[in-house]
Amino acid sequence: MLKKRFVESLILFCAIPLLLLGMTDTKESHGIHIHSVKTSIEKNRRYSFIRGDLTKDILEISKNTIPTVTKENIIEETAKKEASHNTSGAGKNQDQPEEGNETEEKASEAPKEAPPEPVFEPYQMYTNSYTDMKEAADEASPSMTTLDPNTSLTVVEETGDWRAIQLDETSRGYIKAQSLSESETAISALNRWGIELTPEETDLLAAIVFLEAGIDSMVGKEAVVETIFNRVSFSNSFPGDIYSVLSQRGQFSTWPLLDSAAPGSDEYQAIHNVVYGATYILDSDYVYFSRRKANGHDFIKIGKHWFGRE
Image (tube, rainbow, N blue to C red; front, top):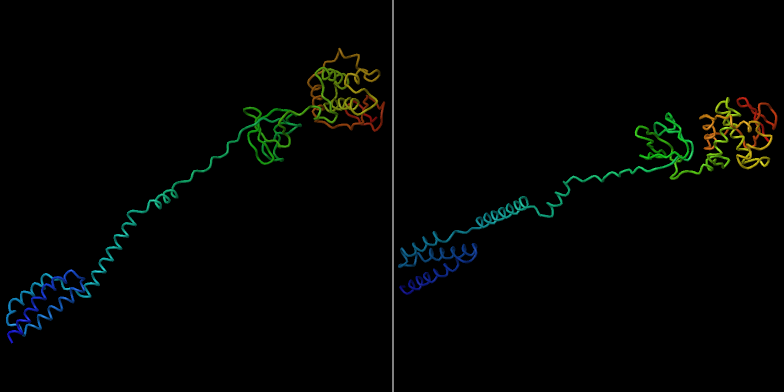
């Protein structure tokens, strides 16, 4: 009997090192070892006559030094760790955004610079005909003035088919783009006779117009000029230049009176209007004019003269 109890006590003492080694295992293993030791101690309580206070001390040691692990404890501890991990991860994402995302966000928030508006560069042009300068870019707009062909001007704005022009510091208006050219137009291309007068021819013609139609209206003066040009350009019955037509024997009774002529601005303006293509009073076959119906046919009276076809 004593031998049996000695063996049981020896087993109990051998179990203590195993119990201590099991403390390094998982919490679940700790629970199993503790339960086994406690069961063994309780079972041997009935047989051991020597364990007494020793057994009680072992149980106190195991109770105080070895934590009690249960399934509920494991679940609670796992939940705490997961909550702590999620919280730290969320904080990192909120407090420390990724550098790329921050750069893109700043770029999207930065105000976009508007492209610079094109700067209009004024340029020089010339009128290619008599042109009305309007107050606005509209056909119905009132006319400010009429510009002569080959008038140099500055285009300061483009509006559809219209061009805003600047004549001087105070004169600005609008004309049609088709009335402008990049260079001056040859005067001979402006009138239907293809005539361009020299200064000497202009003075000679002005003297004849003064002597023939000095008391007539502007239209009467212009009609005389057109008749002379018809002879120069369209009729084979007369010479082909201004001097020869005006000096032709028996044609202009005023030719000997040239020294008494005193042409003024109206005579020169009438010549200018015809040369620059501003008039169309007579057809090209009207080559006669007189104070009476002397030559030609289909007479037309303008002022004090009758004009007839060849």
